[in-house]
Image (cartoon, rainbow, N blue to C red; front, side, top):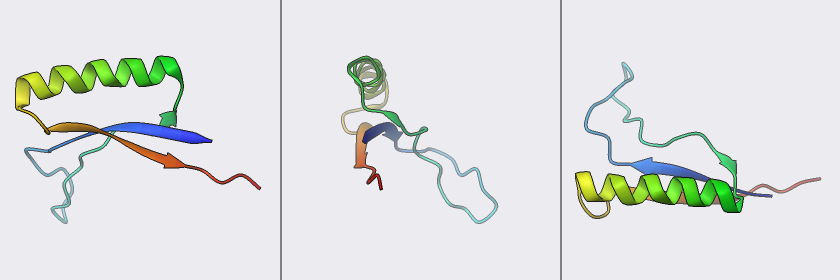
Length: 63
């Protein structure tokens, strides 16, 4: 199963150890989820600059 999530360059830290939170929740890589995240990605890059938002992908192995 393939999954995707939206990632972005964080401008502040949210954890006490200073780790930057910069990714959304993983979701199934469907046509509709990819379209929705791609639209958000495009808008984010227009507002915050090229490369500030991107999609991350992974493949989950099933047993």
